[in-house]
Image 1 (tube, each protein chain N blue to C red):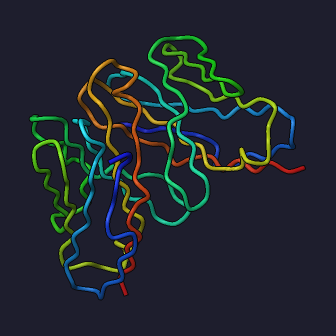
Image 2 (image 1 turned 180 degrees about the vertical axis):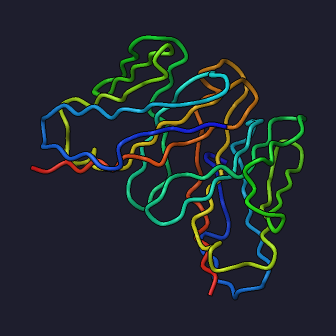
Length: 117
Length: 110
């Protein structure tokens, strides 16, 4: 597609339920990032996929959070047993591995607004 | 670990010049980026500095001093549409994650 696509755009769930958030990066982009942004706050790094390398999972806040990526395409962020503090916008971004400047330019999706009741 | 410091808020008037500073502490340094995010929108890339000096893109410029672990974003001829949050971000080495600061909210008034 033309840009990074995330679905759903909004998700309301009950505390304790599991949720799956999907990200479709720009075609050909080898790098994919997940960030969390609470209301009025900065972007909190969660996980980073780069080509065939092992993902950098150092930002995942707990073992309730996990993410997978199929090759260089779709990624899914899963949050198990959701808690109210998980409520936030979850942003996905991708970038193209190539010249340094293009690799450093991240393209963000519009995010998934997760609300845990 | 990595940490980035930037002011939480900056206010200015239309037509003015504003500078948003960013200091960072990282184990290793690969480059400093700047992103803009309008309320309710997705962050968009503004600039990237890997070497010392000034990079200019239209009304926006970004500066880096690696020896001082410091950079800034300079916005000239401010317009109302520049009201947004601005984030600096660092990568400590190639192939590692891009880490963002907490952001600076810029409010431009007429």
